[in-house]
Amino acid sequence: MKGYLIDMDGVIYHGSRLIAGAEEFIRRLQASNTPFLFLTNNSERSAKDLAIKLGHLGMNVSWKNFYTAAHCTADFLVRQRPRCSAYVIGEGGLLLALQEHGIAFDAIRPDFVVVGEGRTINFEMAEKAVRFIQQGAVLVGTNPDTWCPTDSGPRPGTGALVALLEAATGKKAYYLGKPNPFMFLMARQKLGLHTHETIMIGDTMDTDIKGAVEIGIQAYLVLTGSTSPDDLPDYAYSPTRVLGSIADLNSESGSTLMATA
Ligand SMILES: [Mg+2]
Image (tube, rainbow, N blue to C red; front, side):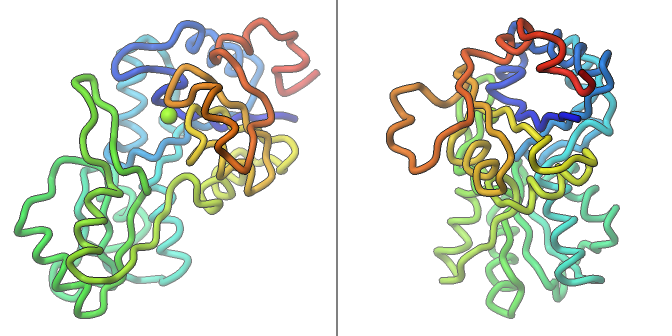
């Protein structure tokens, strides 16, 4: 058996444009019943929202093929502190994932302040969050990314919003999402695969490749996103393989790519 964890931005699309060969690659996985999950640090959208978005771009996948930093955060918090509550600065995907795991939204005395990707933060929310943290709530970020790519350019990411709360409170946040090995562990378990059967495909060294290397799965770096080959010597870890793009995998023999030889 073999299965794939696949980052989204920079691997299968740029903003609202599919990368050449990505759709074919996914179709091949589906046709051969090869297990795969899209693994994204963006906690803004739910799995169903993401499936609709990919559908509009011309890629048909089930919502069951997504594992986001929002799911990862909810999976983690509910295991660490069952029946916890959270004050949330984030969007629908995060609120929904927490609710589905039985984590209530709490603007009175939350156990956690959870910050995710999105555009909802305002000064009043930041002020509330600071006061909850000073009263003992633990600060958690769904992902450490300090910026987030959009069609019109970068915007501040979860890590930047969390930094604001860290500066105001003097407390350090705990981050879920890639490269936290918990994200990779949960995703691998969802695929039902062993470590040696699991391959991560990503474009970012600090998240996709770092987490995959740390948990011991194979890490394929694609050069269609945030990394250039000149960057590689700066890192203590290396990808298992470096690919020009995800399309390179389409030209490999069926037995290499697919679940059953
Ligand atoms: Mg990416």
